[in-house]
Length: 266
Length: 90
Image (cartoon, rainbow over all chains, first blue to last red):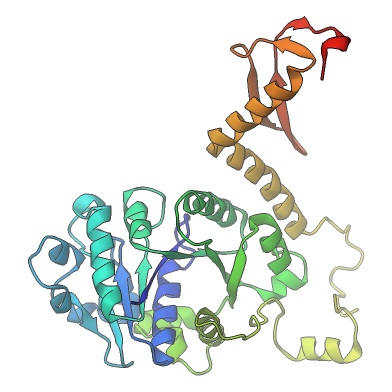
């Protein structure tokens, strides 16, 4: 029986869908069988980020309403073995599926896949509650910004009131240069404020936009900094003891020089 | 050492500190406000403790979190009915 994870954030635009696409693709690259579920009914995105939008025949609502079998709605990713997408419906609204339907659907997927990753819609309304109802574990995506962290805290509070395992934090869009000059919260700040376990941190990376333009998750791009960080996070998710990628410091010769001289450290 | 640009300018508090401080306050307020159970439990325990010394009006009691400029304050208004004699406590 596989694990069902929900990827959620509270605030929109912090990178939930990008995270879902990259974690799913990364886990598949590590040999796991992965099903990605887009729970954002009415505003589907995951298919586009994955570059699978042209291959959709049926969607999640079709499955829930019994128009097709689950297997027929799954879109196979041809780039990575064992990676599938269950797309959201674009024309229906979030009430088209009930929490019970989501739960049984994900349970069915979990029988066949090692990981079922549910991309939750933003907010804390019905769509979010559907996505959460289906999952046994959660990843909270946030950026090191006041509004995003506040919403993450709210979602953590809601999840803690359920029987779900304590959620893990994924900090996205970290700017090492800004952290270094004291204009962005660092890892310790985030841990202190939110008091949850950190799964990983992803640096801000232009490559993500290029990847999204092409419909190719960054984990498939060899030189992407964010892609590299996502690959490490995937290994952590599998329980490997890899240290967190150091995204809190900027790369480049200036830093190396600083380290060499020993100035400016800490 | 390599930061020439910053020299000579008044050093404002780094915005990271500001962000963290604001968040701390916001979350105290959010968490208390979003969880009436927490405040209710706190209220019960306060009544329990205070009742050893004072007889209070439970119905008229009010407790909430107020966010000020620099800190969040737990504000409790507890009407006193009567004061117990010291010998009678504990």
